[in-house]
Length: 496
Ligand code: BES
Ligand code: MN
Ligand code: ZN
Image 1: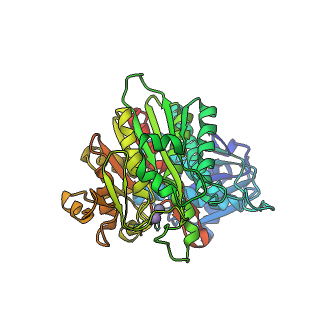
Image 2: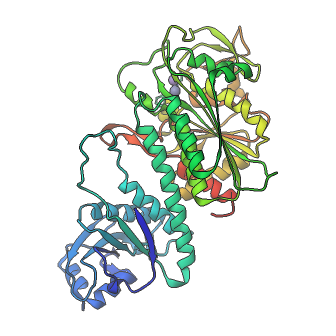
Image 3: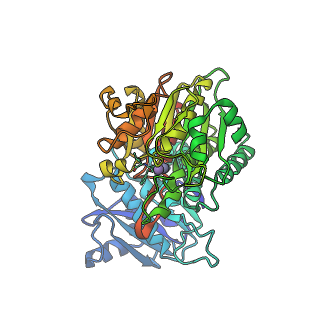
């Protein structure tokens, strides 16, 4: 999609559709009023008939409004003016995109971006606008032999802003576009099935990204991982015919000596559970078990598109979790890269096994902080549903920063405690620790396991099991938590 900023009078713009907001009840926004004036009261006349009252989410499409250059005018309800919030803005923008899809307009002028919202500047409004538009335009049809060409968004979208805000508006729009590109990559990789999106495929994607944006990319093969001693990661890979990969990406936009932010993404390209095999229903959704990895790649894409002035390292341990003849048996004990030994009581708790070696590997970058992203526990879905990502951290300042950035991005997380008391549950009679801590507090004990490998730096863990994809009729990857992560990077780069 093509985005632009327009600062002129909305009634004079030649466009397939002019989108204007109306508050409850029938209170026109400034752009709507401009169109009403140009049409000599045509819009207020229509509103009086009662077809549209400004209720949130309501839309009404008008054709050939006299005195207006646009072919169509779309009225979008904004709800009560005094209650207009960030959420109402996002909902109105999404409703507008939904209605635009049903028109044949080839371009549109969206004026909703002019609305004032408390604590949300023009940069935020345009950033969100671009993200919501791309979100609405997204489809995953690369594996369908016939594409459906109904319901397409206009190719070109212009958003309006007051002339004095044009520079900030343009900056926000470009950020939103970059974040959306990152999210689209994350969604595509997530939606690809396990027979296509293998560890080797992810490595190829990382290499392609590195070529496109001049990043450093190194892919460690099984032999190199063996030499390093990544016994935990390798134990998961032994049940599969697909070779495991350990992807290292480096983006250097900051000063040479500046400590990097390290992102670690779980890259299980399919999780059968291994010998502790999962039940059949919905097992297909375990192709999404690499969404942490995909969110790292998506965040790198966005960061490189925005040319952020910071240093970023991405680590992606990636393998399948299959029940092959070489697979771990419950009770097996393996030695991690850190030297700590692990009793594998459940082979389905494999995410932490590949992440722990990546967390140890992260030490060599002397990170400013490390954030890992993983579809780690079903328990997180039970605790927080599909709304909030689970957040656990060994540093409350970092946790606070991530929570705040999630709010701003509308990609929210919620913190759970990482108290020492929970470590009890990981005790093993035979090894330094077990890889499971029983049913209670499953998300917390999983993070407690990881915390044992993240002692040397500031670290946070995002459990995205409930937020990385949707099930049911709208099944598909969401692109989360790329908005949260990219807002965090924007903040760190002083660009938020
Ligand atoms: N990838 C799953 C977590 C998961 C399950 C995410 C369902 C989304 C939906 C993970 O590898 C896993 O299997 N975790 C186990 C851990 C348990 C064995 C301690 C789980 O949550 O059941
Ligand atoms: Mn599992
Ligand atoms: Zn898993």
